[in-house]
Image (cartoon, rainbow, N blue to C red; front, top):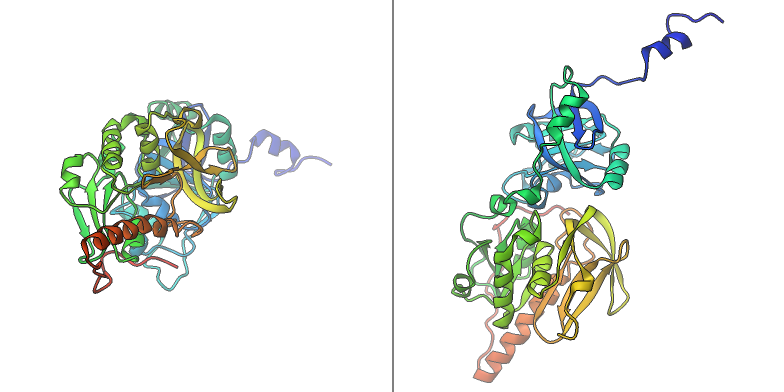
Length: 410
């Protein structure tokens, strides 16, 4: 049968099918993906990573731990329930760009106030849709998290020119990303609650604060870099070092802080970056993971009970288990079942503990929400002991704090 206008012969001449595109995502190793632009028509540069979370794209955008990263959502349909400012996990989005298979232009949810496109446009964040996110994710798993660039209006740009831009993209580990995302000044939440928790902000998510307020704590959020002397002057009952972006090896100031908190006997909880800083304060090392742990489906086993929980995670570095001190009372209490990485530390007698994952979720499962109860139990026992020795009774909070932060989605 002779070839027609659209027959086999002409299809071969036309070459590989390419859908209509106006933007491009290029990786430093030469891989280029072309797709459709949405969000702000600006260039985004940074480290390309992926997250397996199926919902919570707005929380992903506003998670400070993603600062300096272009994020690929592995779930194919994003934006279908719109956006709501109450779902922001910090003061603004921190991602350098968003990569999706399909973006929804007509969301449906009773609390939606707009589209993801408009939200990213308002915050000057670029996005690209219509690419094969599965192929991109598999490629990242092969080569590791790497430099990348997201370029709008790229129809006339060659792959080589865009790749050259990607090869000069900065990585979060090369920047002071914690200094970028941390609070500028002390923030107070709650009025008369007990205990008083100081949260050192390396990139804290709002749901960590909400989780404490729901348990009637009073919370002071202080910027990373504040001295232990100034923190001690706030008379904290406990200290939390929050999650945050970047390489823990760049944060030597945090080592002295953790050591001082533990030496003073003040209960300590490290979350994600705070976990890594605890390990470094003990003399252990950290190293970069090939493609990180990012998503809401990471299984973690409690080594004391054998119980397995599903956790929310967002980090690109891990504690080197073999470098942890032996015979000093520190136990590895939690282990990642995917790669046996260290997910939790706890001292046998001191009130100090840490977890690599995010017990506050947002987004993610609530399997470990009780970690905040375990931490706060340290203060109740300490305060009751002190007050009993002095013949006092502990005063309960008269009212629960309310209205301090936006509501949390169920």
